[in-house]
Image (cartoon, rainbow, N blue to C red; front, side, top):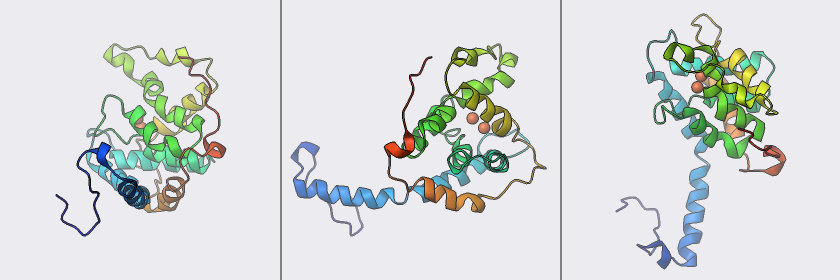
Length: 200
Ligand SMILES: [Fe+2]
Ligand SMILES: [Fe+2]
């Protein structure tokens, strides 16, 4: 039972809901979604206490990735993508790339989503042979139109961003960008564009 003053629907089974019930839920959901940028920021702050052993925290890693993307002249979509690319390290440790891609997918181009979705596999290039894996697995995407974008993301922003001495910007610097990207109309065709076939 809810204890606040928010109005509630009449039903206990969805199939019994009235039009008024669903209009009420629609209004409440709209208001809730407006809080998404702040929840993204809270989730990012939570990265301060995830994977250990690196010379920077996971939060510092993503802040540095975003800082390098900005320093490298990337646009706001890719900067924010770099910021959220490791969300899911805590809740989806075996598929964090797909997790992060799902979060950002409604708000950025299909290209940027694809890069985030595949960055884990592409990043394997740098270390997976130490665990007996194939560092060249990403080559099966060689002919994909966004292959090089993902190679560049990993080489320039992701794998390079474990340096405690880099002039990494604080989260506050990226707050306006996070608010702009995650306040966009979801799945706006003018933003997300066309999705090429995934030639996996
Ligand atoms: Fe990652
Ligand atoms: Fe990363």
